[in-house]
Each structure stands twice: as structure tokens, then as C-alpha cells.
Length: 165
Ligand SMILES: Nc1nc2c([nH]c(=O)n2[C@H]2C[C@H](O)[C@@H](COP(=O)(O)OP(=O)(O)OP(=O)(O)O)O2)c(=O)[nH]1
Image 1: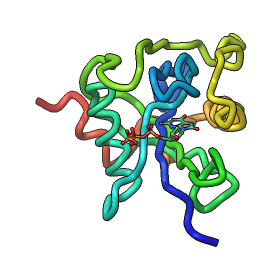
Image 2: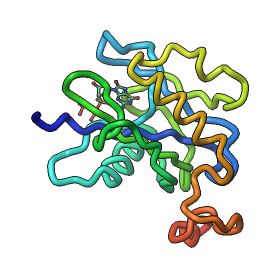
Image 3: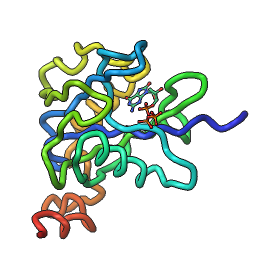
């Protein structure tokens, strides 16, 4: 089977160590998806790693630098099926620098409390619904975004970047 087009998406939470809310983004295009909510991100370019693509897309679309937490793994090696031609890998993410703004592709960004039920009520792109469920489960785990069991070092290797210049 030919490889699916690789898309990457960010489940941006307020705090990887103790997520309380998620930043959902409302798309402006194409017409079929306009007005629907999604995980900010986009297509991986040839020769680019998924992680690099996610950093690039979030800088372009929202004007932020981020720290990647754990991946919210989907059923495929390529992540979550979106349609017959594309699949998306999704990471929990925390903002490192900048205030997210809808610079490109979105007309609204909204911090939604994770435990309120409000997230599932947004009109998501339908293919994202199982991902929303998985993100809620992942965020409910202790130290959700952490690659470490040390609560004082929620994301080792990245922690020295925070607060720097
Ligand atoms: N970014 C994103 N794309 C999603 C989600 N769910 C979903 O079905 N998609 C689809 C919509 C698009 O067909 C495709 C991603 O395309 P995109 O338009 O975001 O990619 P891009 O930023 O690289 O844009 P372009 O270069 O094609 O203009 O994946 C989601 O949650 N986030």
C-alpha cells in the first residue's frame, strides 16, 4: 500500500506536567473544513522530520515556539487516519515562547478546560474525534506529557530552554 501523506498536529496544553486546558483552533479553509476545530499543524515536507514539521507549522500558524511532550499514538505507524490519503501524528505540546495568535489558517483559538466536557462539544473535523478522546485520556495520566518519572523534571532535555534569554 502506498504511504499516506504525513500530517502532524499539536495538542497544545497549558502545562505538560499537569494539563488543565487545551488550545483548539478553528480552520478557515478549505470550505469543507472552514468553521471546524482542529489540532494546529500541517503536512510534513519532503526530507523533513515530523517533529521539525510540527515546530515549523506552529511557528508559522500561531507564532509560537514549543516544547514537545509525549506522542499521542494512533493505530497506524503514521498516527491517526484522517482520510484515505493522509494520517496525522499528534504530540502533547506546551508553549515555550510567544502568545498563540491565529496568524494563518485559523480565525479563532480557544483554551478549553479539559475536564469540562466542552472540548468534545466543539464541532471538530470528524476525523479528529477519536484523537480528541485519546488526548483527553493522555492528559488525564499523571505527568501526561512527561518522558520522565521525576515530577521535578517534567521534560528533561528541554527544561533548560525554559526561561532562557
Ligand atoms: N492540521 C490539521 N489538519 C487536519 C486535522 N484533521 C484533519 O483531517 N486534517 C487534514 C486537513 C488537511 O486535509 C490536512 C492537513 O492540511 P493542512 O492544510 O493543515 O496542511 P498545511 O498547513 O501544510 O497546508 P498546505 O501547505 O497544504 O496549504 O489534514 C487536524 O486536526 N489538524
